[in-house]
Image 1: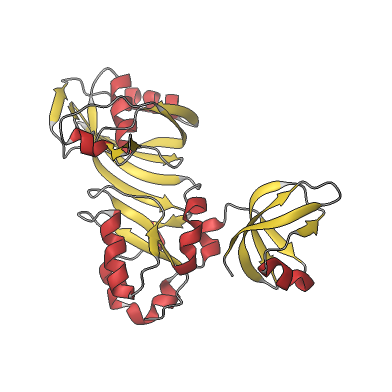
Image 2: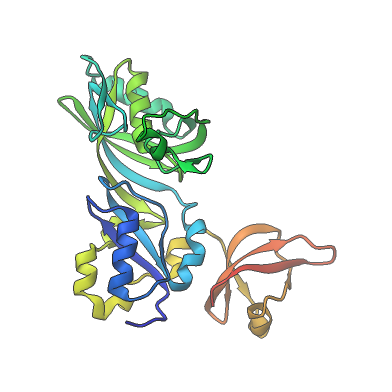
Length: 294
């Protein structure tokens, strides 16, 4: 396998695999160690899991700034310790909300910044340990609320004691918690019973392949991989003059008439050089490369 692979591998993660499992299997398939993912998916969840290969591992933090989109199912009438259908049931309720009640509750979080208490069964670290490590020992740890944004949410379908909801949100959003809190806002309880991530880092599941499909198409892996810019399309683009090519590759600061801005894609000679920023200077503003990817 080519050890110089650099780009984004659009993986469709199937149920039963952790995000770490996917990375480990790809290391074996591609025979390379420089691999990482851009945002975890729970083992029982499926969907888009962009994998960074080679130099693309440097941009995963920038990739995760983009919104994510999910289709999630909530089952009303039960609440579990893990906030999903696979956990121990803690609470029951006979109330099944109507379609109108669900739509009304969704409208209240639509295009809103909300607060969430991270679930105990999550990988968030407190005092050096992941929360699920405490939970598995029966310990409940105090957690500070986090702020996340729901850009768009809509009810797709209501059937029996379940509802299917599309959610577009910021990174770090716990969909399990969002659904649990949504049910509580309707004076009932509910838990996540299905989760499909349809968009991550600008990459849709329409472009994703399973691990098995990757293995079967290993000879054309370079054609399957997406360029790094594909996952960074949310960042503005800056063109640097051709004669400054060597300067910018060597980390020099380049003067510019552009206004100060953070996080932009830097191109020179029609090549994607890296990620940089425009900084304010006394005489003329400067372009500084933060992540050199050439």
